[in-house]
Amino acid sequence: MSSSATITLPSISIPKPSILPKARMALSMSARKAFKQVGIGLASTAATALLTTNALAIDVLLGASDGSLVFVPNEFSVNAGEQIVFRNNAGFPHNVVFDEEEVPPGVVASTISMNEEDLLNAPGETYSVALTAKGTYTFYCSPHQGAGMVGKVTVN
Image 1 (tube, rainbow, N blue to C red):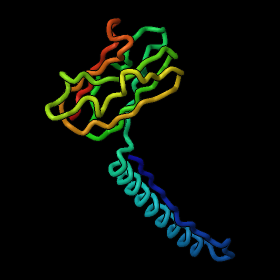
Image 2: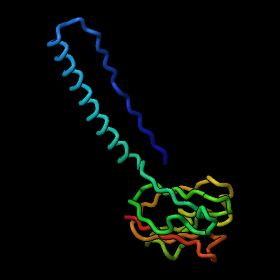
Image 3: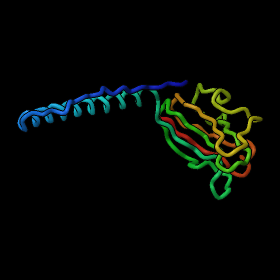
């Protein structure tokens, strides 16, 4: 799912007046009012764009910077529909598999998991998922599950 938002700002052209100071002050107040209204409109538009496009995301590193075989963070919470980006940190082959026995009822783990044979091999490669069912999900890296590379996400 990909969304984008565009914000267009109105331009205000104020000619350089050769008028009296009182009139110049009135013009300045008018310009300030216009800029304030534009600012309020921008803030409102940005907030709406964030809410409607699920722009919020959390980055989860696959492997710590010291080479440890862990998810960083290994436990976290997100709101339903927020994007989770799993990012290969160190270059070891990793993947993200949700445990079919530790997902909320009705969730099919294979539809939100990477295929166990698919691997993120290079630093910076990513796998993204947005979980919509509320509850707790356990996930692991299949090549390193035995070494304890397991994580948990709670969807609110």
